[in-house]
Amino acid sequence: MVVAAIAVTALLPLWLVVAVAVSLLLETRLRTPRLLWMGNLYLLWDAAALIGLFALWVASGFGLRIHSPTFRRAHYRFVARMLEFLFWNGRWVLRLDIDVRVPAGFHDDDGPRVIASRHAGPGDSFILVHAVFDWFERSPRIVLKDTMQWDPAIDVVLNRLPNRFLAPEPAPDAHRPVDHLLLDRIRDLATDMGPRDALVIFPEGGNFTERRRTRAIERLRAAGLHAAADRAARLQNVMAPRPGGFFAALDAAPDADVYFVAHTGLERIRTITDVWRELPTDKTIVMRFWRVPRNEIPTAREERFDWLLQEWEDIDDWIGQHRRQDRDTPGSTRFPPRSEGPAGIR
Image (tube, rainbow, N blue to C red; front, side):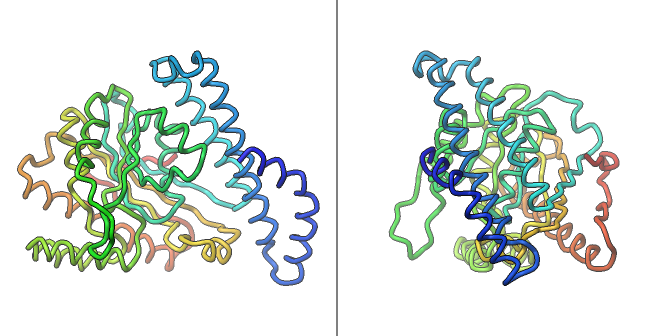
């Protein structure tokens, strides 16, 4: 990664000249130089992260104290600053803005939290973790797909911190074994959360696609949960959540309140083709948090699953309403707040 970053950067002036020429001839929004710049920036960002992580490894006594509280805090600060730099560049290159809406009193308590978010594209996990780090000053513990380890910097830093890379549940026709220890790994991750920790989980298990949405409905019907399957079939913007990992986190962190996250703005950016079509994005990503106090969460599994489906239906309704408002009026519109107080905007 470091060698690739140096090689690409050395040729960047020449490539930018070619990219601008191609852009002026074939399209008017400077997509080619923007994509080239962001690709080169990400290579440099990844390489710089690896060098910084190597320095931390050396400073920890060549790894002897790498998991100590001091070096855990140092890694969290390092990741927060790297994400801040990445988003600062993304905002002006992609013309991207992020509107985060939180309930009143969001910053008032220091207790641990379980944050459950919908999953709509490769960028939402970065944005959510950035929000947890930078705006809410929490130390995130993330449950994420094992394929994220293909990125060298993510592989190194997140394996040094309390996170869990999990293989998603295979499709019925896939020739891959089921991970029977998945729930135990999530419980282990949530067990010792401290006052400023937040466990981040995506209960849908993957980015939203129509194929995965259909498969989630079929999975509920196969389990005999026909009423839940009918409710899931009415969801248009999200997939039915998989409750196992989320409930395992709740059981392992009995003092943690739950925050749900709905967001819109990334639905059309899932592939490289989508990125090309949308550049520059000129988007405002609206991310809304709301709190469910722990004493309001049912304890019986069936009631808890019904409650989780209701929350996911609220997310689906919010996304649908926000899209309609975007079509009808310019600018972003605030969703009616819940009873805990008016939404704040940062």
